[in-house]
View (spheres, rainbow, N blue to C red):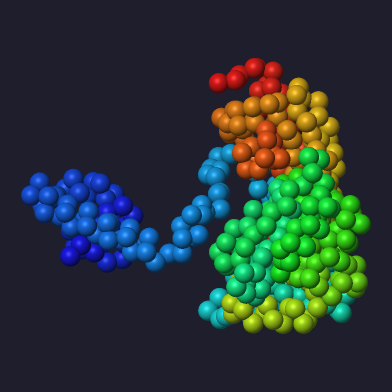
Length: 411
Ligand code: PMP
């Protein structure tokens, strides 16, 4: 019986595979008769493995592609809405000194109470509402989906929107209904209301500002949708730091609205901390399915440290808001580029017809990574999404795009 893994190496390798050399090299070390002796069993091993995976894993999971994260080694990263700034050396030093003292042999605070208190303060969240913490807001989307995944349950969201709504619906066995925005990326109120009427979704996500379009929708359309919904409506405020609009007041008016936020976009993406704000009746139920200790000790301590220095993050956010305007103006002056309004830390643009992938690749050749959205949704034809970087980074991007757009380099 063959137990080892020729491609990736696995725990129970036979002794002849136990060296640290690459597997191909290891195989070439075998004498020819040893190679042929093992070849048949290796083939059989992989055939059985493939068959078992195919038989056991749910078909809808097999049909999915994993969330795509491109390799960004050595690239100027303007693809993932991260804050481009780090902390001053002194802050980093104090932070790392503090990390040393943490009892990492112990489980973290299971509820993250201190973190919640501080989040409440910096975000001005009233004591009337509870907070639930997630390992990024992705985890919160998953908790919501799991809690509401009765047979036949549906998640509904405007499209194009954040891709995880659909992916998580699939993981958790819910139906997913995407309702197209208008050509201008506004909410299609009639279509939304008709879809709510037809599908009666358990869960609706409204991201404000919306990813990947970057805009805010008409408040009265949002309210009509909330009023028509029989299920839960989650206002996803991932980009709240970059806009004056906020939807906390909806919590007072509607008992079925929840607000979701994240620290990822304000400079703490690596810590993975998302939050859900709402009435305890909802949050207590979700808390039952939250995995114990989901927010690790390093994250809790680092977030507390960062929130103590929240002003520092706000200064960075303010700078990004200023730089967004400059970037939008400069992008608008590029030949053939259409720039859409943005209230987030990214800008959606439309390249001349048929050029988006080409421009994306050309930028990649220049070591600049943005997001190509062409092909993702019919409304995003020829579209690219650019995260706002530092002013120097934005200048690099703009001059690269200027070069690309004038070189006429269509391959
Ligand atoms: N909501 C929206 C609209 C997003 O764009 C993102 C991240 N791109 C998230 C939620 C998830 O954020 P995180 O898991 O990093 O908190």
